[in-house]
Image (cartoon, rainbow, N blue to C red; front, side, top):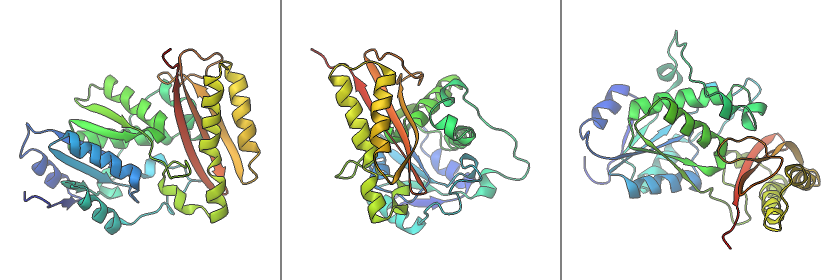
Length: 287
């Protein structure tokens, strides 16, 4: 392969033939649903820095959307995405279609049980079954050395790590920090749905989570008190409608009544019809 070339394929045989030309090399993999932003590109850069080859998948996975969700309207712009990935030195882009990923007669799904129960799993009951199934398929196809995910989808990273451990996938899951706009809003493909007033209102997610971090730093440890304080901030924003607010253990994702030395603060909020998620990690600072 010439330097600077990027293969774009929707063919499983072509993907596998390319992958196994250099079986001993290291491969970084970034699974995406496209409509890429700086958060995705930061994952590609990390993969580029840590591996000899980089693979990105672009696939809007229908099995992780409920019938009431935004599958049909989810933003797509493959040519724009490919131009961005060429600029990051990606070696191969795998862009399959539904018929390839879920052919007639498909009936096998991967389910992670406990880690999917709360948070997104409670609000979107079939979501993670779709995520783990498609990610397992992509891991099987790409056979990466390392796979890169963003912290913004924190529960997803916990669920994927559990699946990788339980099913003995021979790869490392790398979780990278959330990339934010200058005003704190976590970058998301769904941000494009927001009107200017909604875009301004959406900063309530990061402001609320930061307020929770401040309360923890000041010594508040009662989970119920923390959740109530953050809920109050969300409810004070007229354009926001709270789905959930969480103070949970960062590994088990169990809601905490009393915070120990670490926690993950998470929220899902509707701004108009657009559902946004965000989270921030907290741990006791060393004296």
